[in-house]
Image 1 (cartoon, helix red, strand yellow):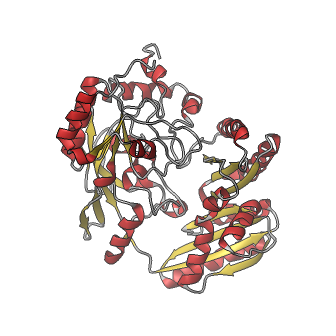
Image 2 (cartoon, one colour; image 1 turned 90 degrees about the horizontal axis):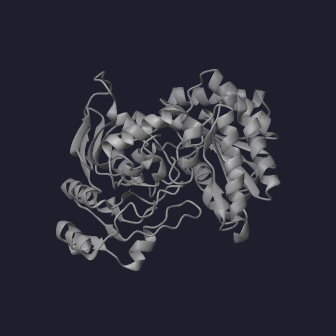
Image 3 (cartoon, helix red, strand yellow; image 1 turned 180 degrees about the vertical axis):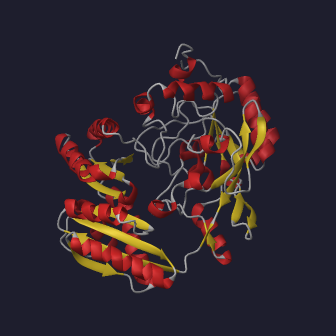
Length: 470
């Protein structure tokens, strides 16, 4: 179906330059290449032109024009995605980097309205002045954008307490191919007003609309934070401790898992000496000084009861940052062991965590891969890092291993994405994951984007969209 879309012509580029300014439109090779990939291994797809809009109205006109000409459009944020959210059918990349303003901070109502190109860490740095923060804490926070987080329903290191991006988006201003600019949602923290289109758009990965403004709910910065690392001689002991902490209802902000191979990589590149352990848990509690301390004490008690043999406690801000740098540096450290690395993102029932890690090791051994596991185990989110070192000839083995894990996860009632989204990497699992309800998603896509110009090849195969019997 490669002939379904129109190619970008010189007339199209002229139109875009008149609309957005010639300095905001590029066909230079450097710009095309840097907008051809994200952080996923493989999947190089070069667009025909890159546009940097500066206003919502420009985004609306780009979509309207592209819909009339049947040209693919791919919105892009920070490019930190891990599932291949790339211009599969070439066309136009709409890079939201220049729409990066914090429009309004509503301190009284604990809300903020931002453009989609605002970077996560930069937003929280500004909000800190007001004693507020936007809680989802992705490891890519220094580069990922709020628009990209909403598009993928990102979460991260504090999801066990604070949840995902979906819990914090109150509304959008969004551009649709046929329906133009729409304002969706309210400024209230709850409502019962019919179909919740706002929640439907979160996680849609640019396949239904392009966000031009996002209204976020905020939380007060906690008065105090307690952070500890606990080490275990077995993965089983570590996961038992996690289950007991969750089952007892202890109020943890983070409950992060790291296995021995990951600790080895972090130790080498971050120069941190860990004990000889099979697993590490990073635990954090938030609240008043008294509440955070007492809750951490309860967690440590559970850890000791379940085989934790050494505990590090952060006694200063510097200690806390050092522990978190180890966790946030896990993926970069693994990448330094070899350029060919694929990171999996699955979410599973808590009772199957040990089995899932063992399954990952077994699959890795089967395909001769370097295998390490990290995850937000407080909510069952596992990331498996599959690697071949610098051996590019074994890339196919990475994808086969990941496929085997994904299919097993679905078979036990889990999901193939906890926070990274679908992209190109996981769209082949959509029907297996959703069954007949996948056809409902197809119908929604056809209704809102009847020419399929928005992010074609992302989440949905074009053939599925064009097959009217599906």
